[in-house]
Length: 161
Image (cartoon, rainbow, N blue to C red; front, side, top):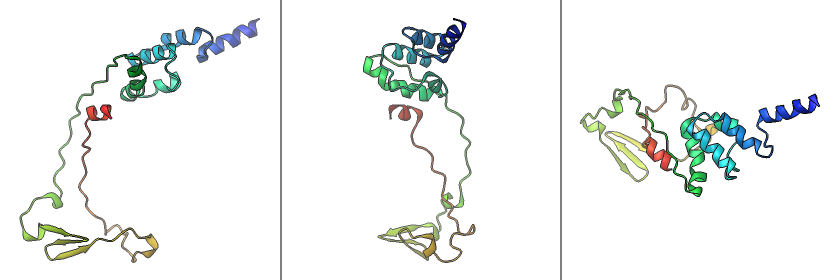
């Protein structure tokens, strides 16, 4: 008898879905708004495509909200999305390529597969295997200074996606 009680207790602690017990356990363990919504979806039988509770719990708020977005919409439940505060962004100094000097050498013109920058001429070349490249072209002294591309998607756009 003691052994059977120990096994049942272990199953309950592990969150096994015994009839009626799994949903109650989930609701008892839910600490946040999204965890409660998760448990309600599971209780309604709509969370079959959601991860296990402990896996769901490891995600951040935004990921949890995105996981719950479709199942709640299907049931007509309005889900409050997390509000992110904008972090202050450090302003990076402009690189020499972005300095905006008005000398004739800084004006470039694209003409088909050719790029003309002042007296320099560059020709577009497709991808080549490393074995077909000249010696030293992949060296550290032969790198492009490409400016950092800022992500155009805001948090709201990510949520809508």
